[in-house]
Amino acid sequence: MRRIGCIFAMSVMVWALAAGQASGSTALHQARGGDALSETLPNGPADTLASAFSAACKHDVSAFTDFLTTSSSAAYRGLPPNQQIGLLKRFVQLEDPGQPLRSTDASGGIVLRCETPRITAEIRLGTARIDENVAFVPVSLTKDRKVDFGMVRASSGWKVFSLGLVVLDIPQLTAEWTRQAMEDRENEAITAMRDIARALDTYRKAFEKLPDALSQLGPAPKNGISPDTAGLLDSQLAQGQAGGYSIRYRILPSDDEERHSSGFELAATPKEYGKSGVRSFFLDYTGTLRGGDKQGAPATAGDPPVDTTSQ
Image (cartoon, rainbow, N blue to C red; front, side, top):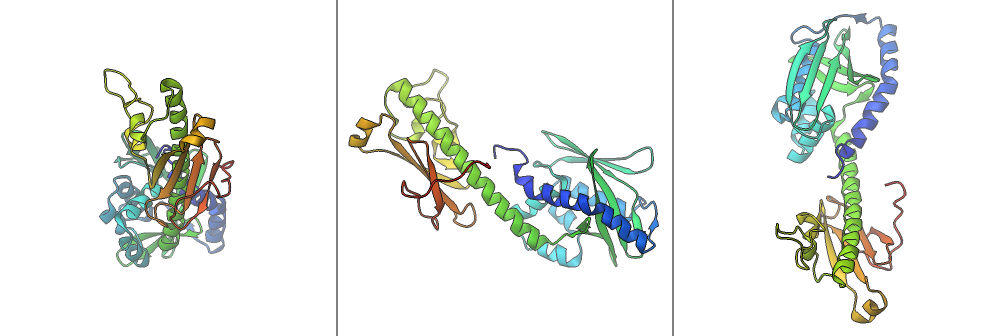
């Protein structure tokens, strides 16, 4: 997608909610008489959580499963591969797989760096607070945001079960992330239609006509642009493809084109209705975006305008 990390809107919301409740988890442990113990020893809650972050950093689905509770592990294994990877991306808030590098700070806390080709994230794990079979590990991804990860002691070791007081309910979170991903693809389709419309206007001004097909707007060869390869769009958009959407281009009939020299229509429909997107979109020479839930059918000029003020 065009925005790195836009797919992480739900994870940021979860982290923010957890951060707001972190103080509540501290009070809960104090009320129950929990001890503030240093648990960064091998196989302790902080050590185990660091290993879970390492697995997520590497996009190691098999290893990450070992750090979940029995029910979460079963739910996670049942997800499609792309959703399994998607959860790992959100866990470390990084798009690309990376190389985890582990060290300790001056106070003995665990520091995990996840180095990807584009960015490096630093994750700091503090001292775990343990109360019988439950532990909370403070984790910092940024200087001003610290969240308690909840760990529970099982027969096979410590397992991740919450972010603050937000229980790690994988099926529910997956449904929310799927919805967010669909919204991102819809927004990507809208952006693509706007880009194509601008390219069509540029083409018309340069060659005094509209192209017969979007492919004529595609990348130009080294010897320069031409009406057949204008170099105005990348190869994907020139094929009418934008993420989970297909975009159809049509020149208006000649009688309309005489009145509107830029007469054209663009219609974007989800490739898989309900999975790659829900809404269909329509954009023409007037610049007004229209559309809605068409059950996978193309949107038309008769559909209501789409509000994009919040996008």
